[in-house]
Image (tube, rainbow, N blue to C red; front, top):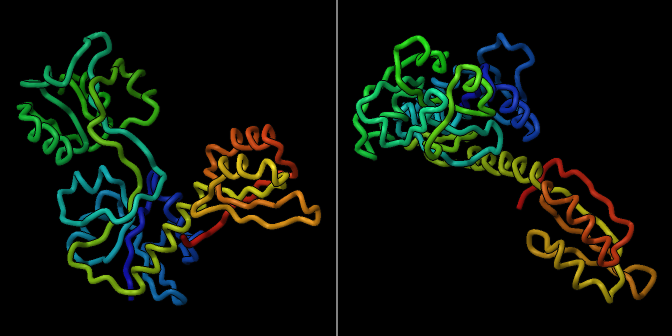
Length: 281
């Protein structure tokens, strides 16, 4: 039986469970449940604190887990990232009182508050920056105003909370984070694990792409296919009108409206877009 850790709460929890459902796995319906067994796939899911998932997977107690890249690095365990899941994106940034115009080198000798001491310590060590790390469990943005730190290092999504606290980010991001699937370094890959990887990767790709179908005159076919090359190549089928063809291809979702405009300009007609719910590539 395969054992997989899933975030039990926080920003990653609902999205992780939704992705697993889309991949064909059962998920809990009661948020108080700590475990759930999926008999069809012979997998037991464990709902754990996102910060603890890397520790359980790294220790070998669980084979796979979904957590954040920032939490994996901060934990310092030997689990490895095997698949980015394309949700829960954030950046890890330095911030200081607005108007100070600080640079990364100015952190030397200062007190830096963070909820990620492992990640921050590693970053500072790699750059030979000696600073005092003030480890907090939350509300890091208040540390400067309360006088316990001179700057902070924290996960930033929109930056609104920082602005409310009178802080501004500076320097390059320490880390670009997102939800990831992790695996223990001592795990022996088997067919069940490979199936999980294929299914989740199929959901990631399905969310990133759509199917576009259109008709186009053969004289414009080459120009249209250049706009929709697909993954390998587009599917082209003859129509009853001998001088026209039907084309089907996968297109990146974020580019679809521009591509629709361009297809129309080159003469494509009857253009349809369809969502992809799952795929294997």
